[in-house]
Image (tube, rainbow, N blue to C red; front, side, top):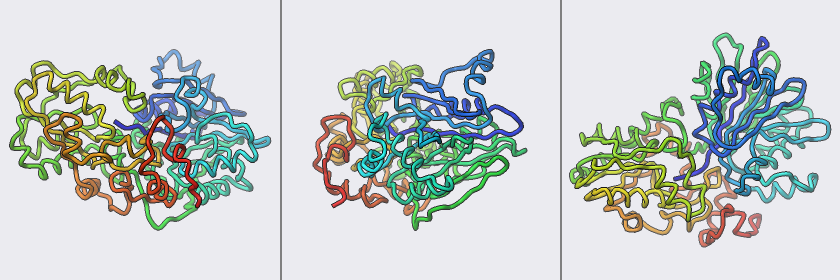
Length: 492
């Protein structure tokens, strides 16, 4: 299982309506994108900020008065986080929680950020020249300070500088100390960001996913374009395409794993794309389908693909695996010794449902193999005769530098082994990955507009490609990112 995610939401309300309620629901709808921490930042004669650890809490109706008083104002931003940088202890999680506020002279700037920065060493060196003591270990502080330091006559001036100088993925919502709300997306559009509004124009918002708009009864206007900034003034919304790139590189993994199934990407609902993934697998691996008795899926991101496989093949889809809803820890954020026990607690096999059967297990991806190995072991213990893995995402062979926490090559089972080797390592009778061509076709996007670097090794940015090419033998001994441990002269 993988870790990227973060989710951002920003809103401006007219007519004296408070921002907290839409901010809250925008986060609830996107809580799947981050369980480590959540936070709010509103503006009302200055910033009001609140962050905490864990899931966005349930708020009873009678508590709203207190929350609205704590976070007043008609403009605000919010964030849910899974960190891909920084330390892993509780204190650091809270310190790195977003939205994050930095000061630049008399002005303050708050941002919430989804993504990951590649040229982090260069950025830290530049920022450290004017801020000798950084307060966090997070990319977000570096991005915020660089942005704040380059906002001359306008917000757009600082955003252009970031887009030109910073390599990586970043979908950002921000607040200036005069109450100006803004949002922008990196020139390749790697991470999602969309814009929406109420029909009367009283509420305008940006969200990582369309579900954050839906839950607030806002109509989807469309995506914030790659290299575009959206500036919310008092009476209008100004959209500016500040930097144009000759290609796009939207993260292909959003379709398979990150996004909620009811979100819309590129005009298609994610669940319909995942169903097509399942149909593709059924068409490509017909011989294994003929040998199987039943389909099951690892809940919940593989459920739609399992349904598509069922439709294509006619095989029965049984809900033989169930997820413990209130075990929220993600296996990939834990040390290896803890992963198996956490996975074992999260997934339960329905007793007796699979005994003596040849089972196709649909999974969204295989990264390290820990999750899959543990589940296959449980299936064998419950009497499954054969276990075939059908995997919607192609074999992952390369780390990601744009916000998915795959630290090194050697942590990836798909880097060290082919399909037969992976099957042996995890205890499956066969592992069947979807091809890159089939995957791209199912998304409805052009291959040139998707980043599939983790499966093909072709990165959309220069420094990331250089790091990958020069770091294939770096062995992981800790949780740092590959370019932090490689100790390479990356500018050479």
